[in-house]
Length: 339
Image (cartoon, rainbow, N blue to C red):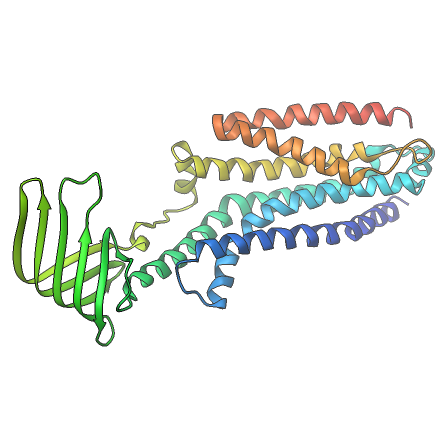
């Protein structure tokens, strides 16, 4: 009898979980592609490369979607059991709400462990690979200079190319560097130039040209046979030294701290879903099924305060979940005592 009840409850849970997960995952995927489109607006990228960038965001998407879908499916099931009078029948057989939630405990623990591995180990490596691909494409964009176009940049230099001769060879080059807060401005001309990518270090070798420095003391001119302008590509600034070193950056990096807080909150929310889902119990004679609104409100009330506190005070964000759980359990007990 117990095994049959557990199998029935789990089968009904999966019926509700997969549509919820699919809908939330589709929405998160659409938002992800909008973000990726903005990130890749200045570089040319193929469909395969866009898909690889999306895979780099997939662990973060699952951290958002899985806990919320799990909780929404649980509270939807308790509400459905109430509406179909099955919960009242089980209560009449001396089964309490915790007996009904028992088959979901191993599932919640397994999902929490999976999210912990996903958030603390897989997600940092995936983000690194995503940034590596994106930075590599941005560095290539600096190398693929087009002739006759204004507004192109090489590092801090504005660059104009008169003509392109073969791969990474140019002639009639003009470079300008200077901003309003600089004392001196520089203007460089060259008859020809070569572009070299030395393991992420971009080298622009100028030949047969003149350079001008314009400052308060006037204009100074130099003639040169060869000049090399170096620019460290973004890929060279990217490093990944392991999971532990990545999370140690949370002490100084607000972005990393936010990622750490969110990963741990996803695990806590998955476990807290078990007692919180009991708030979906209601009497079909005197109440209505409000499981959708309840799931949405409770999810927002869990994550919003924790993330606001986490952004300002770091680890103090974890004060919010116990308070949330205490309030939710108190409300659930008040509702359950009528049954």
